[in-house]
Image 1 (spheres, helix red, strand yellow):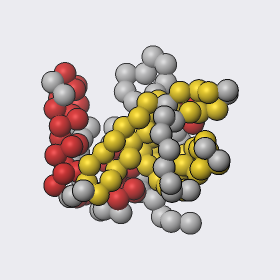
Image 2 (cartoon, helix red, strand yellow; image 1 turned 45 degrees about the vertical axis):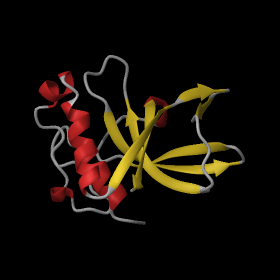
Image 3 (cartoon, helix red, strand yellow; image 1 turned 90 degrees about the vertical axis):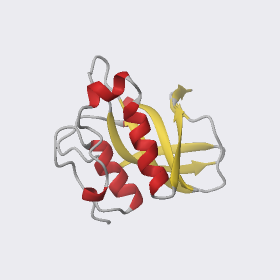
Image 4 (cartoon, one colour; image 1 turned 180 degrees about the vertical axis):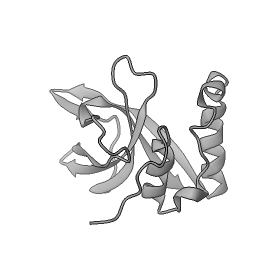
Length: 139
């Protein structure tokens, strides 16, 4: 079982999740959580993430997820049978969302989605809180 990186601060789940997915040292990833409120108002939060990914030769694609017949549905198909990505989780009424490392396994034309690492120790988030998945691809 791989050794995963956990959060070092209260709101750095995205930083830890990128480190886990990309195999990059945690300290080399920007601290996206700093001044989040100010940047979110002007979309600078997303711009900072995109700029970082572009600098390291990657880009991202995000998809909303939904429930279909009691199972999570994702609006895409990929020829890979198993792959990892970032999941955005959200609890009703929460001020912030939460990022985790997911694994998607194709089962026919649908996917089984599993949280393989939650960087927040003692987190109460579950796969039922999933609202988006984010693929990180090389340019």
